Length: 111
Image 1: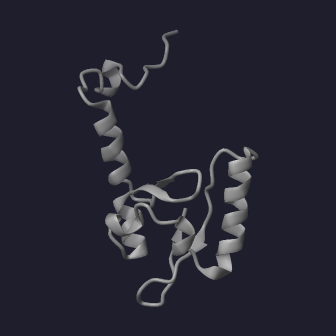
Image 2: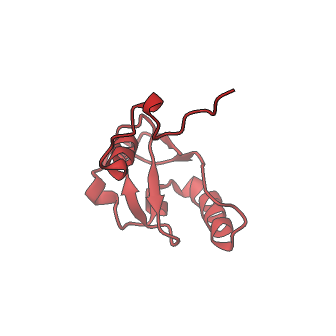
Image 3: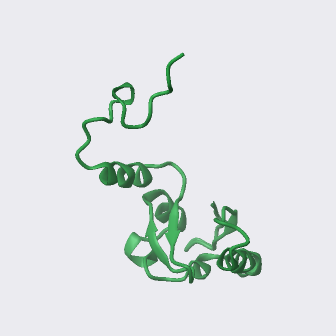
């Protein structure tokens, strides 16, 4: 029995990558789902293209702002509770659905 190949093995075709960090950035940015990375205070450090499209804003409009600014008041309390739980170390990440009032007054779901 052979070991399963790891991500840098020739079976995956990634062994010759000179910039693995660039690969991850490309994967995140081209994902079909919205992905954001935040600091411990909930300010966005990164938002991929799919998330920016869902929120009808540019990456520059997201970075540095508090994520709860983009969440409907109806969902904000629940989200802030999860953010507090993550800060305390009770949970390691937040994956949740929330509504965001778009410029068109419609709502979308993100995680």
